[in-house]
Image (cartoon, rainbow, N blue to C red; front, top):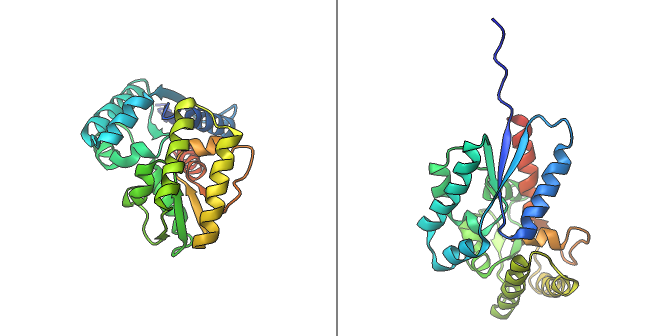
Length: 231
């Protein structure tokens, strides 16, 4: 009797939160896999405003249910692994992972593993106000987290939300983050500022930040590719 061929891995990626971040994830993953990939890649597009509204209202149950419909659709289409190209949506990752039909590769797990390589580092976060003020939902152990000032958080959140909705960043956006990041790094002596908003990867795709940084999206994508190849 001939052996039954193993099922090829298919990554189901939830994108659209925001648009630029989804494009960044797709390009990085598709380019890394290239032709002759051992598996496949498919996308589901979530509604950015619906997600932001749920996060803003603290509607964890509603957000979980909505994202689960995205992942269920991907699983029904053949996906064997999943990931979400967003930090803010991971506020419900525990609830979502418990009901998901397929494994979810969490950005939290990826970033925690990266930070554990150098415990005790002094870090700050750039992303939405909620991400910053919750210290990325309390998911980062063994680090000393420094928060920007209230005025800096307002600037960071305002510029970030605008570029996420717009779908692309501008030179002015980059200059704002560089200015705030450089001042914060110098004032607080941080070892790295986590780019804890996936749209920041798009903003800095062709130009390094003017401050010490760790890009959560890049770390996440690396983990996704490692899991995909091992599957």
